Length: 351
Ligand SMILES: Nc1ncnc2c1ncn2[C@@H]1O[C@H](COP(=O)(O)OP(=O)(O)OP(=O)(O)O)[C@@H](O)[C@H]1O
Ligand SMILES: [Mg+2]
Image (tube, rainbow, N blue to C red; front, side, top):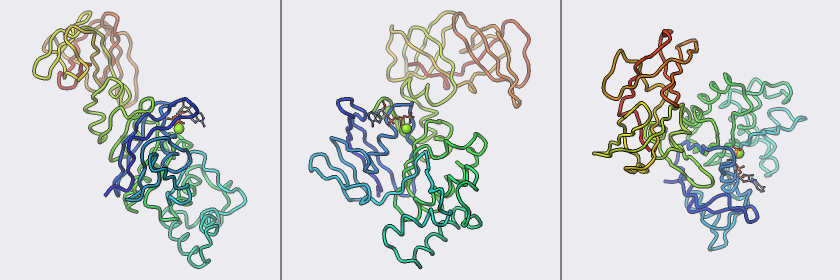
């Protein structure tokens, strides 16, 4: 059953439309990430679900209970929605201990002391925070503070937690550890989570499904593998990875494949819905899919090496092909001059 269902949601700030008909579901035990460029409406959608912003059309249901319905004028306030919220600036109470920070919301709800103690201890245990219960926020690392913020949301046992950039205050290495830890916790505690991020690798690593927002609309949604491996639009392809792009003209479309002709190349790839014969088109291929080849052949181009960068685990080579630049990985340095590159047709998309 869906824990959260959003249908045709519209929201404007003044007369500036922000969400333009967003529909989505979140199933039990699922982690769904909202991904998209800055300003695309991710936080706005999360806040609307939480009851902190008022949409003007559409519906939001939690389980089978409508919490917002524009037509029926239902609008249950935030405190009646029983959702766990974790925002980017986690704003812990500086003069309360870790224990008190987590207990505070329960006390406000007039829950008895014994039960508060039990629930807080359970959450501290789950988050590996038990040894830090008596510390104050300024005595914690950034990652530990983040976990306390999460604890404050989890102590209510909400069916759904909403996370807005929960890891953005952590440095790169901590962030990678934290996302594995967070994913494991969500699965172990059987939570359903809607998580905003603008980091595509974080979304790929953490989620069961990804919704990609583009200017207030869902551009594409699917599993991480679908989003990365089968983008339907140029926007999705571009957003989801590191890419090479070639501009040209779509010369032929046959059996789901399209040929793009450009300066110094004619390449076959998978035709995407937007490709039209005779029209300008764009070919795109992930960096890691281009191969260095030893000579001419099917879907190969000859390009000249511009520069190479050593990345530690591999080399990244930059090539010029007419006006275009192509990047490819290799396991050793290359001599200056011309090289053949293979762009496998099953890894190349033509938009
Ligand atoms: N309170 C507000 N009043 C007016 N406009 C707002 C308000 N909050 C957000 N906006 C606008 O709504 C749009 C979407 O904002 P939102 O915060 O949802 O973006 P986002 O996808 O979360 O971006 P980011 O990745 O930068 O956090 C932006 O153009 C923003 O300027
Ligand atoms: Mg935001």
